[in-house]
Amino acid sequence: MTFHSPGDDSVVKKEDNPYVPRTQTAANAEEDTRGQKTHTAETREAETRAIMYVDPMSAMKMGFLLGAVMFAVWIVGAIVLFLVLAIVGVWSRLNSLIVDLTGAESLGFGLYFGAVLILGIIELGVITLFAPVAAIAYNATAALLGGLRIKVDDSGSAITTRNDTAAKTSGDAKPQAET
Image 1 (cartoon, rainbow, N blue to C red):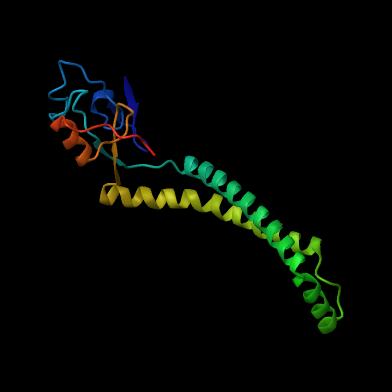
Image 2 (spheres, one colour; image 1 turned 180 degrees about the horizontal axis):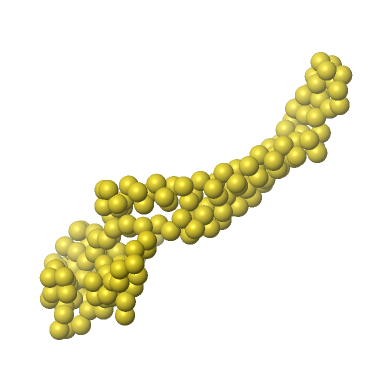
């Protein structure tokens, strides 16, 4: 199976691609195709990998979803703030001050939520448009610095710490209940 690298027309074989997990067998458990030592299922440890490329379109989609969630939180927060200030009586005092100073209409529910909606829509647009710009900036710096290094475990289990590994090898550790 072959894969194409992003932004590149070269073909990468599955066994040469560090981003495609490989299965461990008894024949290749000691050494993989790149000559690095690997571990069997009993002693498997986390593997360090690097995120070298983030697709700007994918980042824009994620930015839109994040912005939509933040927009919902913004609206709920504005409603709660409006209700609390109305109960305390801040709006009536503010309205009487505005009428005394300008002679204009008072600050009402419609004007308040109109401003809240406009600011929320601007926030949604900024986050949506900023995400692909951040992805492009990340791609440029990852090419220079090597990307963000993460540890992954191909078995899907939690990554063990050094203390857990030492306890397992000593044989006298008792399993603890998760809290």
